[in-house]
Amino acid sequence: MDTSAATSTNPETLDATHEGINAPDLQVFVFALFFIFGGITSLNDVIIPKLKELFTLNFFQASLVQVWFFIAYAVVGIPGARLVKRIGYMRGAVAGLVTMILGCLLFIPASQTATFGVFLLAYFVLATGVVLVQIVANPLISLLGPPRTAHSRLTFAQAFNSLGTTIFPYFGAILILGGLATVAAKDLSGPALDAYRTQESQAIVHGYLGVAAALAVVAAVVWLFRNRLKGERHEASSLAQGLALLKRTRFGFGALCIFLYVGAEVAIGSFLVSYLIQSDVLGLSQQAGGKLIPFYWGGALLGRFVGSAVLRFVSPGKVLAFNAVGAIVLIVVSINTVGTISGYSLLAVGLMNSIMFPTIFTLACEKLGRRAADGSGIINVAIAGGAVIPALYGTLADHSSLRMALALPIVCYVIIAAFGIYARRPAEDYADA
Image (cartoon, rainbow, N blue to C red; front, side):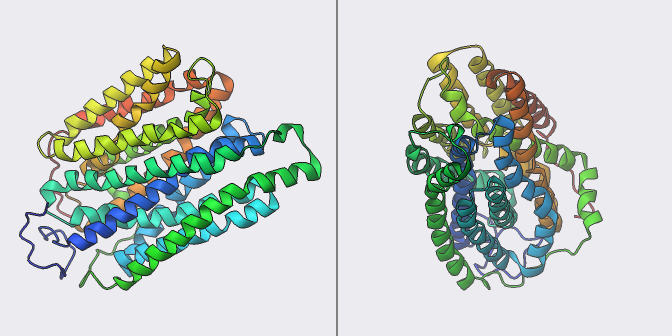
């Protein structure tokens, strides 16, 4: 993959003048990080219907799981970027992994107290670790090879993210949704209700304890390689300087599109089970609906492997615009049909989502040079769209229907298509990069 002029697998510097780092072992490490945080994020789609039943929530209240998870990107994005610049990529990854472990362990008191608010706190802490890992992974994979293939390389890495989002929900549906009791939370009250919530949430606890154990192993391995990047340097900057990147039209437009893309993808995924189990769609049980979530994320997996090849030959902006239009068409078909066509056309939106995040990210951050960490921090703040758009989607669904609420993702994809057309030409050089 790497055809650059890099001459060492132990780079002396990570700056704008480097033609790429020839370090295949580090690429494997970054691919593993993409797999981990992708899988953890997608587990929310399975857990939302579980918590919705346990705590008798409406769609907006259920969306608070995503609100608390993705708001961490807004809170931690910029401070996280500054932390990574201070301690380096590898130590930053360890800090993120350890924080994720802490978040997983918080599900124990959440279950024991049977309190929805403690579950939300656990998600926030877990997401804080995910943000730190993602701040490391996105720019690092862009640096591990020649700049001209950064779009393709990040898209290929995102395929491992999609592999995680495909595998985790399937087993999560079996473990978490398969254990729903014959009684319902709405029929209980007092101590009986608390006992029911504690018992039924044990599947969630067990799942995250398993994740915590796996994260501990990965963190230990990464720590062993903490000095792998020799002479790592980042340009020091203030918060104001980081936010100043938004004045660049291309970067600011791209950050907005990250906000909208993540929001649309998460909104659809969050309520996909609820959508598929409707009688006029597929009429499935919750567990059966949960087992179809991998088709949504699996489409993204397939599309990213294909996209990593296509992006080597076709303008990334054009590919982005094409996929955004494809997503719009599929959603319109789902809204206006019933049964199998309605269900599977919405699942197919995952295929269109495939190349969006890595393509928007690299188009927006093109030629940022040593400001790459700042750009990654701002982009991670924009991922907070995963908190805002699903909440709006849930509110629309509560006041109309899940079908009508799909108009919101359509608006998001229209704007993303416009960015693809705008960014189809190479970025200009920036004197302060």
